[in-house]
Image (cartoon, rainbow, N blue to C red; front, side, top):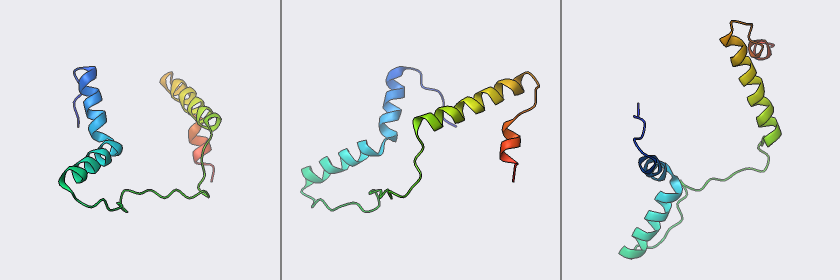
Length: 89
């Protein structure tokens, strides 16, 4: 488990090191400096199908609202409604 960052600079540093875009940038510069031919990285290319389901911001907000209210209810010992929605099958 990672420890919490001590400062905003440390948090930004970890976010930068976790980003794939930063690693692509460094790889491109490394290849250019060392004269290595730039080949397309098939493993890093993400092909996104236009047929995939994409949620809208309104759908995300409604789902968040349902879960937030459900957690709020459960913190007071009330019945969770989300369990009924999930176990409806």
